[in-house]
Length: 382
Image (cartoon, rainbow, N blue to C red; front, top):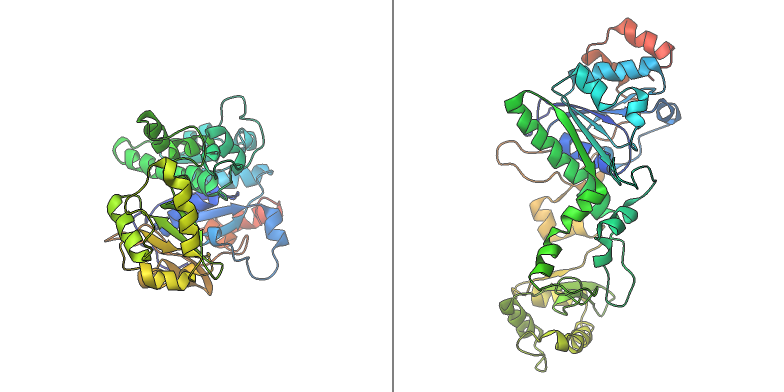
């Protein structure tokens, strides 16, 4: 691992390896400077062969193998907890408690610990024990209903809203808030993030717009959900796409002026005129390629951008100028964000092979060599 800086430098984090939101949260904390130790299953260590997989979400932390089904392995974990500032877990409700590493146990040993946990349905309520995935949490929260075109099925937005926005990002904010509070109280606490809660929270603006009479009950008929033709995507002559976001009247005027098509209305029509305007926009944008439209619209103050694939985005001049993406250890990936003026975030290191740092971390966190040898011989660590 490279020398650590960042606003969370000096903090120690234990991550119980999981999927989706937990690793995303751990990645962010590592990017911000925390020393994150990823606790992986001993089976993963045994199965590791060759270089680690290029899993961007696993970047920047060290990996140890611990058998959490072994009393010795659980005790080893708890000794790490004794020295940690934060623990992250994303198991189903009750799993860490059954393992003997639930929040009551950990906080009794280390009252300053911030115990961060994330689930899909939450830890209470009728659905709490059910299995689920991102699309299910979005569905129940009301967020999924809002995404899609009029007259068509709701569209799952990959796992951005549940796993990463409403799960991992919310857990990260909660952990940072708990750490800030600990600075004055001296006490840790449990941060309980549920993706169904987070997805609902991300929908807050819609409740306000509806209360103001600015959002109807039909999907795809509103200002921001592909209802308005001046806030939508259009195919170009080469099969590419462009995104138009000319919501304000002045930007709409700039758009129409740049398109140079005399029959387009000079002002935004009311919703009754949206279908006709959409059809005309679709005809116009099919007359040139995506790059040709970029040349026309980039300086027009029309709230325009080309729709880039994730593979094209790192090469765009704007992203390249800002360093929005980086090539780290040969792997192109998004750079740490946000940006800090004094304590910049950075990628702390490459993806580790499962169990790569077991001896190193245990030694650094207070285990004697004979203790490590005994743990390994008994199957507690790998």
